[in-house]
Length: 228
Length: 129
Image 1 (cartoon, chains in turn green, brown):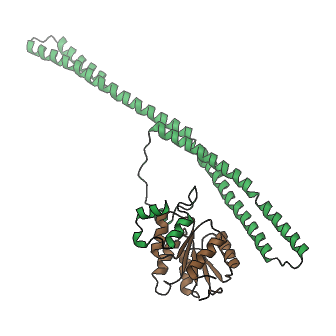
Image 2 (cartoon, chains in turn green, red):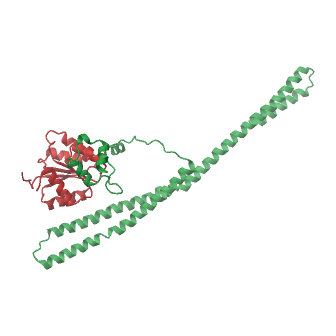
Image 3 (cartoon, helix red, strand yellow):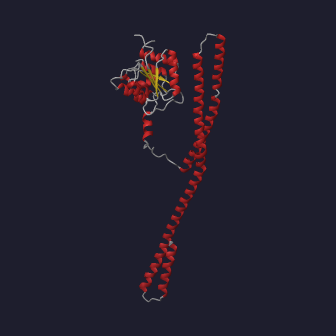
């Protein structure tokens, strides 16, 4: 029952007792005190009611805003359309490059295996196979377009996640390392090619193996100096 | 001592195309006896059962056993520890190159590479040919 209703009920009870025309002045004094107490309690509980109400209102608004922001992420569109499409594009890139490499390599092996006994025939065959190599290189145009689509999908997701994270004030949680296979991969597999070419060039690696520096000297500072 | 051009060479890589490239380059250099494995585990098994490889050329990133793990296993194996071992990988972080050197790799080639680099590194490990 709300505080105002409780106060009204107590006040009604007090009025009934007063109306009974009691003679004892001390009892009337107690009733008057009780009346003041009820009025103060009514104010106190009323304010509590208001603060709880506004707190729930705030939580409700937050939930509604979260729902709107999640909707703006378009998670179903990302899961059902964009990510599968991007995955399919990447698979196609792998297949296209594999097919082109296979074609080019086979043609190169064919050329290496040609018998140059008849020069005219040899040249005609080399020309034909070279043309096949040039044609196979057209994969670059198609894979370029496919990769652009994937980049556009990633940018789309990145923008929406960044907006969501910013609006909701999301902080990164601790990384979950419970997946044993993933843990093994992180510990044992390396990052592969760097974006801007090798982190350590072949010449620097050669210096290391040519004995320009000994294993004992292989502190990080010495290594950094050697490779700088 | 002259290099035995007929010696068996084991190429370890999980990409068939890369194996094919290395196989062709080795053929061009005069090495025809090339066998292949798709990861460290298969390679180690072949080395134990095989003809006694004159050279192992291995990638780093492979599952379930990496080239680095294969290297350590080979160097810890009394029968195989003397096998010349070259790492060919796209991984070129300094600390990893050093880790491989400390584990006993004989040379290290960063991808992409060419026939001249491969020839030079093989020669530095097994002698001029």
